[in-house]
Length: 252
Length: 122
Image 1 (cartoon, each protein chain N blue to C red):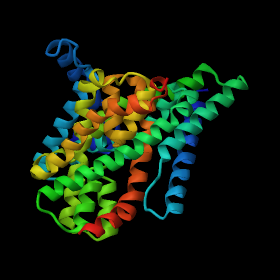
Image 2: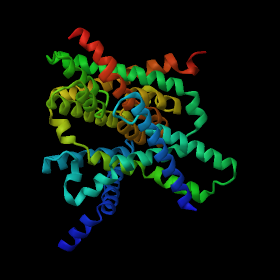
Image 3: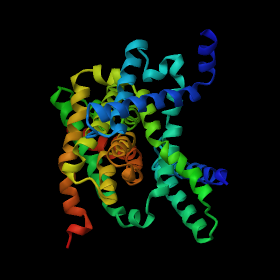
Image 4: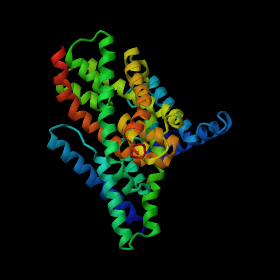
């Protein structure tokens, strides 16, 4: 048994494939039996992934979910930004360049509306919580954009480390919320075409959440949502600590 | 050859990320601005160019298609490596500031589609 554990720890990524394959089987079975195929297997599996992430944090008090357990470290490699971005780029294989070009301005408009919407709501909610200094408000508003914009903004405007940690937590909650709600809401909000996926990616922004949510809705939409969502974090990092912070300092 | 497809994908990935980092530097922020988006566009252009030259074999396409199919498993692995516990337990402000704007986004989405989508412009 010790030998097997050692072997697994040495070949973490490979064991990660086994683990995720296993999660997928369970997700698929649950989808077919409990949810009668109303919720796709991939959506159930992604949710199970979140549960594993929670359990990992519960058992280890670490920050990287289940991958903090040495046995499951490979899951962290497989789910890290390198493989995530590499596989998102690969989905462009099925995308139509002409469609992306045509809907480009729709993507741009929704990108700007999305960042402004999330920032203003984040700041308003923080304000309602009694926070009054511009740096903290700005960092929390940025965290409502994505969990990368939050800490980058916080560091730039000199927010406290508690506020920066909070902004990361807000961003992660956002990613989880988009992941879970997208397949549920897709039909009601008319999210079915490549153009709508591009606008959706622009508004929601969190590229992990958008791509996961679209994957659970209709995998064909993933590249269109991803192509706009990928600009969200960058534009957010550009606007939040500069223009938005400047505007906030006028008020606080 | 399958590796040609994987190599094309990898090349587009590196070039795209590079453009993203350069753009971030140029804008004076410590972030990668749209690296994935640029990489996707490079991959589509590269594929288009090879298709026109009749150099895009099914095997080569397969080398890219494999990775695009690995996308959902990678997302599951990503979900399992998120700091879910801290996100859920860092208090009501984190939950509310994380969820309410998302719900607002869902509400505003149909309006944006109606307002800005060319098909509804008449």
